[in-house]
Length: 88
Image 1: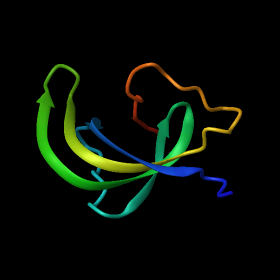
Image 2: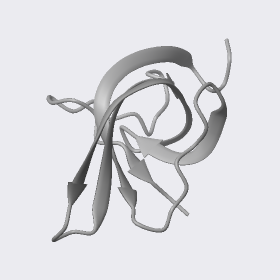
Image 3: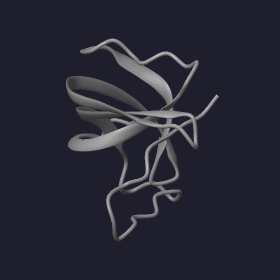
């Protein structure tokens, strides 16, 4: 079994800070957390961009792949869609 877990696919809005980089399409990038686990994501397709002036966030509506290990002790599934956060 791969220690990173399985690859899952999802359509969701990802929030980016104003001065942070958006990963290139088709490349794996780490520094993300989903279901309380550090993971890598790969953006496959970008559908739209939207701006939240109050929070200073750029929302990228996209399709992306991510690793998730459901057998990990840290895994905690949420009822709603996973909350993807960038960590640095």
